[in-house]
Length: 168
Ligand code: ADP
Image (cartoon, rainbow, N blue to C red; front, side, top):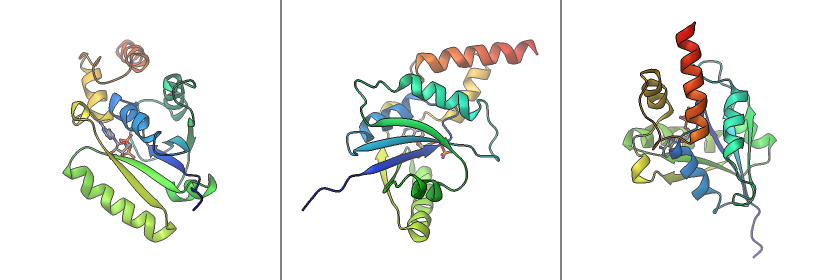
């Protein structure tokens, strides 16, 4: 049987990208022919970085040499419609806790029911089990050290953003 070409999308807010996300990307890319990190342009969520800034930070982290097949872009609207437009056959998501499982289970079932698309989950690496973008934003606003949880380019942007916020 001929192997099917698998194009996966990894959708999320990535506001900002953390080492936990990066770990899912690095492990996920080995499972698929192509992996598109898809930054959602959600109008509802309280955002720290613009979708353009989030895409920029992620593209700085995608090493073309060691991460072939990985790319980043932003999208608007429903994830399943975006997946169909990009002819993706898999949605990749990460799991940290039982709370994640409950929410992600519902999301995956709905996406399969409405669009017939499969979701594949990657379990967090233990050291990132508690890392979330929300927590990163909170710690950053209080001036905490995040060097173990986020990449250096993200730390630099956060520092700048927090300084700018204070001077306003
Ligand atoms: P969303 O708003 O869509 O949940 P996020 O950027 O918060 O977007 O997360 C995108 C995906 O990455 C989700 O599947 C989330 O569970 C997963 N994820 C976030 N942080 C981690 C982590 N530390 N380890 C593993 N998966 C994670």
